[in-house]
Image 1 (cartoon, rainbow, N blue to C red):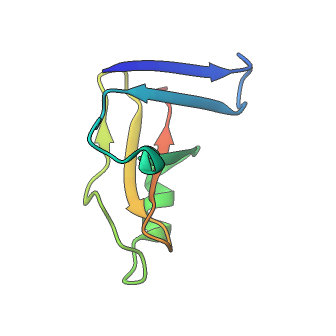
Image 2: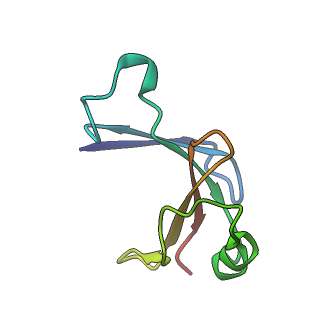
Image 3: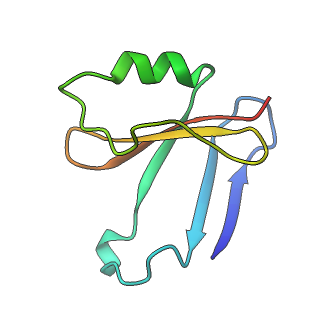
Length: 88
């Protein structure tokens, strides 16, 4: 798997992450796996969306070795949405 990050190298700026090799079996028109939103407090955001109207993908927050944390859920059209908090 290969990753590339595109951005403006500024604090709290838009960043685009491109992933190659995640799932090469997807049709060409369905290559977008998810989009992510950076949040300041992932625990508060998870509490806010944890309700019967939201289709959760992850039951728990995942913590990466660098301390960053993320959580996935489905949007209104079934798309995958990620809340992401950078390691502190």
